[in-house]
Image (tube, rainbow, N blue to C red):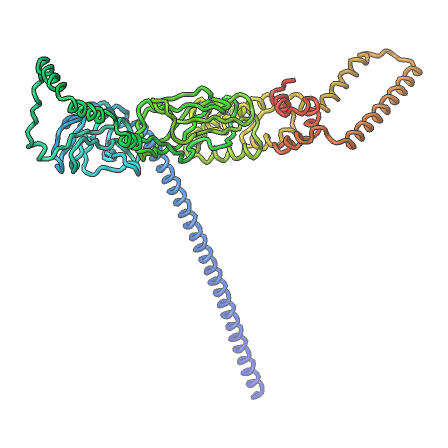
Length: 568
């Protein structure tokens, strides 16, 4: 009985122990599951936080891009509005309110000069319009001045306060201009005063001696003839007085000295590439290095040795004072003949005296620029801010034309009709006729323009571009014409003879062509220099180029004309 009870107790304890162990394992398993769930929740939360951070960063970048685009658009709109406003500014001088030219004033006196000006432009005058005077260093803002706010068509009073000169005499003020954003506009105006000291004003006017009658003068002459030697002395004295002093005359000539020195080319630098018949506005920056202003009526004339613009003459409109710089411009037309051309000019005074440096323009006239030159012109075209602004505004128009299937030359003409200011750019001048010629042979898109110009020889741009193909096509057409259209049941013997003769003729033709190719390879090409020049221009299909060079006896210009215009 004791053993049975002990056994029961042991079993009960073992059972309790097993249950406790089982419970512990279940709790451990539950804790492990909770830990896994907690880890998964933590990873999920971390992932959500990373996604939220990424979304926030993306939203911030998008907002920054939008803000940047909006700022850029606002800046472009402001520039455009500023340009339109500046183009509409103008002024016209009406009259002097006070201190008309030649007015007498005291020296070392503070005065206020007033003019009446008219706003004859399209833009109103605001606070940003100010008065400036022309100095040796350029335009300088005048502090003690007043410019009214005027609408277009209105007149107002412009005034400036200044102190009269310290020395007596006639004095002229510098030229005054109305300015906006550092650039002058409208008429120039000035004042001229006669400064006098207090002593000059208090000094009584000297009375002129009364005029002598004819009898009195005759009597005095008779008395002088009696003196003899005295009269001779007086005559010699008067003669000496009448003789001009050569030194004084030389000093006067030295004082009035005209001068003009070249500073720099503003437009069309030396050896620039231009198209035949292109309109050009050549501008030089010139400095008046003399000690006087250039006289009214000064002209710029062409000199001997010029290859174009040989009889050119233009009169300078503005006054250029001593020490001032000015833009000297001439409107020219490039020669129609290709090659290097030069036009030389010089200033000439109304008296016929030529003075200053000689100025010239060197141009390289060509119908077909090289790939490097065309690429450089395209980069300059796209680097111009005004061009970029115009193209950005016309993007919808260009996209509409492309969707309608229009070709590039047609799109270019539509764009130039809306933006005529682009016609004067070098890139447009050269690429426009090329597009019109190329459009006859294939449809073009904007992104293939430059690559097509480079590899044009690989495609049939013009008649004669691939003479080998044309010859083969011509031979095929001749053979078709020679063969009968319908053959009615020929005899077997005749078929055999015809096949044999055709095979023999083909073999002979192949042998002759091989012999000609060998001779051509062995002999040097006749126009190697011209072929090299064509390669440098971007032509890579050498075979047709050689044939055309032989045809035109090495004349590159005629080869180009045939390739692009189809002229035989």
